[in-house]
Image 1: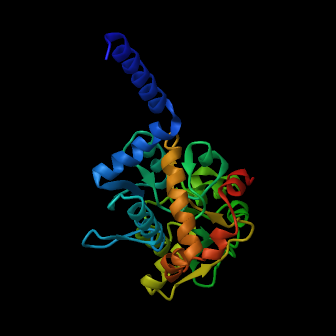
Image 2 (image 1 turned 180 degrees about the vertical axis):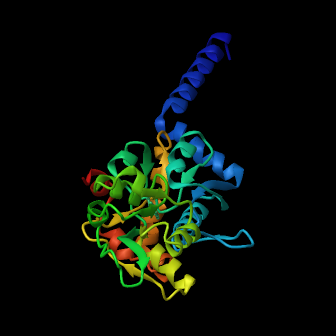
Length: 283
Ligand code: 6CS
């Protein structure tokens, strides 16, 4: 074979490799291949049952991690490794490369949809208040809290409930950032806040475990929307997100999705009756 022929073939092979490497699909699969080789996906969670939970022995459960673990297993990523984060720190942590994905019940809202690549919907829930028995201040909405100058609300930092309270007109100094459920309950019992706000299933789980007859629940919070989360990937990892969505859709189709989330109290139908596009466009 002449030198000329060999050089022509080598040039062709180089051009072909360059073309393959440049195709988005090939380039983006690199992230999935990286996770497969790593053997796990690093997920951000909040430890807020039943969305996410970490047991005393470190075992991670909750509807969001359970769905993610099953989807990643089908993608060839053996497991997930979770780190606990405040909701407001999750997206910065994802963008800084500390997490591969957020699987925490991080509700889809336009500003978040602009910052991350969400999967299709997974967990949907309304909002709730835990408050003193008899609801002495008659708090049924975030506006009720805004309208009562003596009322203080506790909510997760950077969370949806904090934003809903501020948007309803509750002054900053009456919206108290609460790091976790146990702290919120204690602050309520000590009278440092008048309402503690989380999604309905989280508040119900917390109040049921507290077994405190002096605490009651108002749910749903009047005027607050039903939100849904999705697994949140870094912008640029859309191919990984798309691969996740393919397996998520199969789980939904087969009924296995319902089997994973409904024992936690979530509705598969609620997630399957909406879409990322609808939720990210919602006002
Ligand atoms: O997405 C959020 O901001 C909210 N999601 C959950 C599951 N709990 C509280 C948090 O504010």
